[in-house]
Structure formats: C-alpha cells, structure tokens
Length: 41
Length: 405
Image (tube, rainbow over the protein chains, first blue to last red):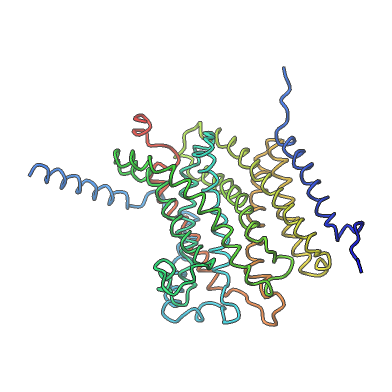
C-alpha cells in the first residue's frame, strides 16, 4: 500500500527546499547590505 | 686562505648577531610578564610530573575519557584559530588582493606558531609520546585513517608555513640571495598550504564521525567535516581582528603611521568575509537541524546550550559584523570578533568534551593542572611571538630590502 504523501512537507523535504530558497534570497540581501550602492554626486 | 678567513669572519659576525638578538629588550616588569612567568614555570613543573608519572598524575583522563581538554581546546580549537593564515595567503598571493598584504607576515607567523604550539601539544596527550613518529614512518598505522591524514597534514603544513615565513628570517639575517630564492617558493608553498589546510580543518571534524553514539544528536552530523572547515574561515578572520587590534596597541612603535589607517580598512574587509562565512555556516546548521528533525531535542539543558552556541555566538555576532561593516564601527566589529571566538571555543569543546558522552553517569572535567598547562602553552606562544615581532621585519618589510625590491 502506498503511504507516501506528496503534500507532506516533511516527507518531500519541503522545509529544506524552503530554507534553501530563504538562504539564497537573504544572501543576496546581505551582500547588498554589506556593499551599499554609492550615490552619484 | 683568504676565502677561509672570509667565511670565518662571516660566521663570527653571524654568531655575534644572534647573541645580540638573544638579549632581552624592553621592561621586564610588565603586567603580562608578572602573570605569565609564574604560570609558565608552574606548567613546566606539571609537565615534568606528567612525563615522569604519566597522564593520570596530572589529568582527569581515563579509559572512558581518553580525550580531554588538551585535545579539545589546544589542538581542535587552536587549529581552527590558526585558519586565518591560509585565508589571507590565498587572498593575497592567489587572488592578488594587495589590500591585505600588510598583514600577511604577521598572520602567517601566528599560524605557524599556533601549529607548533597547539598541534605540538598533542605530544603531551599521548600516553607514549615517542609513538608520534609512527604515522610519519608508517609503522603499524592505518593508511586509511583520518588521524593518519591529520598527522601528515600537520607536519606538511608546518613546513609550508615555515617556507612562507622564511623570507622574513632571511631579511632579518641580511641574506639577500637566500631571501630572493625563498621568495620564489612562496606561491607554491601557499597553494600547497591551502590544500592541506582545507583538508585537515575538515579532517579534525571527521575524527568525530566514528563517535555517533557518543556525541549529543544536536552536535553530531555526518557533515561535521564541512562545518569544521567553514567555521575555521570565520574563526581565522576573527582571530586576525582580535590579535591585530591587540598587536597594534602593543607594537605600535613597529608600525608605519600609514599602516594604522590601512589596518582599519583591512578590518572592515575581514569583517565582511566573516559575515558571509558565518551566515552560510548558520544556514548549514539550520538545514542540518531541520533535516534531522531535532525539534524534540530543544527541550531542556542541551537544547538551551545549543541555542546559546548557534544563536548567541554565531547568528548575533554575524549581524554585529554586518552592522559594523555598514556603519564603519570598529568597536562593534571587535566585540563581534571576540564573541565569534567564544562561539568557536564552545563549538569545538561541545563536540569533543562537553556534549561528548553527554549521557554518561560520570562526567569528565579538566583538572586544574590541565588548565594551567593550556595557559602555559598560550603564554609561551605569546612570548615567542613577541620575541620574533620585536626583532624580525614582521610588521613591515625591512627598509634595505624594500629599497632593493
């Protein structure tokens, strides 16, 4: 009998994928925060 | 005959120079000397007892806890702190970022001394210290073991770091041709050193892969080698910030005035590197935590202890570094560097001592003599560092050689 559920976030490792997406987005924001764009005079 | 006389005179000049350099300089009664000398002497006495009466006479180690504070702090933490050398040499010699050139020599010296003293402290912890030669000569040693890799890497990396530092020694001795030759070896030694470093930093973590049933689940993961490697990056960078800050106050007469200004910019660059590596490390930890479904372990003492390490001494210093870089605040960056070093100490001790056999009925605590010997090693390293810095052109290139090059 098939017990695997595609909607179960734990079984599909959905949380891991969400965390990775968060990391990538936050990483870009962090780099932008550390290197602020210089305003043109 | 003339040639013999010249060689003889040169040898006499060399001996006179060395004897002159061996004489103490500066004040003897400084707060550091007053604290460090008694501890070094006491440590030396304890070591005599250790080598004549065995480990049991001075440590709380036992058959159940064969690895204690000396391995956990001196070797595993000390080597992580020495990580700055391979990062800075990579940035300067391979990436050609000249901004960090002023700190290359002192960072390499720190790395070299850390390996000599901290990795050398391994000898103290071996029941039969003379067997330390076994991995090198291949006597009754498993060639596939992680310890075999770590032993060889320590030896080779110390040699690579000595080659990287050797032009400074040649400058100090006034050996122009030797210095020119040693300079040609630097890039090769740097690349070799980086390869070794990245492998044995992770190799130290790999030593604990065998101890799955002994380490608390919050700290045990099959990714320990990767975590050890990534954390050695920000450990090394934080160590450079802390050590550099202290050195710039203590050895300010050794520095060019322009160096002071350049050093502030260097600190901002190092802090930026630390922020990025800590941020990545934190997400590695979070990913492992979620993947292993460790929520249930957060209840109770070990959960709080884990959060202190990961949130209090990784995530918060990471934000502090970022804030300090953005707002050009050296004070916040230095505080973050100190917190980061505390976090590394806690992490390495958690894996190797505190959360090791966490559920055992009888726990291991280091004896006061183990702590004194550790302090002795730290103070001895600082003494040697101070001796070298006050004599050799570590903070600046020798004026004569700078003019030639």
